[in-house]
Image (cartoon, rainbow, N blue to C red; front, side):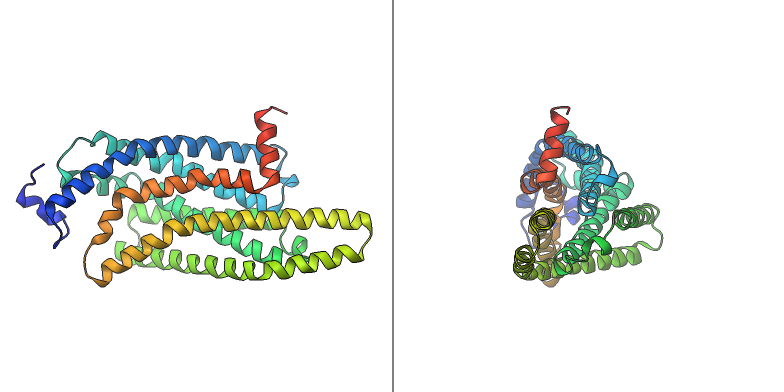
Length: 313
């Protein structure tokens, strides 16, 4: 795997070129796994969406409509970005010209995957932002939650997320405005959204115990029938809050280390973030593939919807 000295400009200075060649070469072996994960990602998220929407939008809680929107983002990722990228890397799996494959991958993402990549990434962050605010309201103002968050408002919020993600994706594809300005604005929006998600999740978790205590007091003071209905509604909202927390935590376990790694590279003035290139799409594909499992294990309504779909009831 000798590398032409003329191509050494694509490597990170100060790190052994032979090590980098071996690293990027063997990193391509994750591609078959990414392809399998993308298939599971498509199938599982479609099952979640169809299972929940079979009974109609009007029968779903607003929080579950947001779950459908996030599941669609994961499905879109598994149907476009993940398999195309994995297929390209599998095609070049035995290519020892690491520089050529690296630049071809960059060009492919810039030309063919700009819209779906941006749409899915911004859509995921946007949906999690909406879900985090929704869960905060469900815990903070749970007695007025059904008035504050209606199905119509949930649909409007999710629609705004997708309009925004499509717009940003198109701007990224056609490089309007200038690419540097666009990257700066997009990065700022994503980082700000991530901070808001984290803040709302922390506040929600802190309020969770107080919420449970308040529910217990209300249950003790009402009639048995009122208690039964209120208890079911409160339990469903608490369950959905836990599920959302798991999903956000999973994304954070991938997103935060990546941002930290890139930040360290900027500080030491080295392009060490390039070592993340072969793993960014596989990691986010894994995240999208695990989310349906979290929905199924963490939410009774999702379990019932999927079981009913599979059994054709």
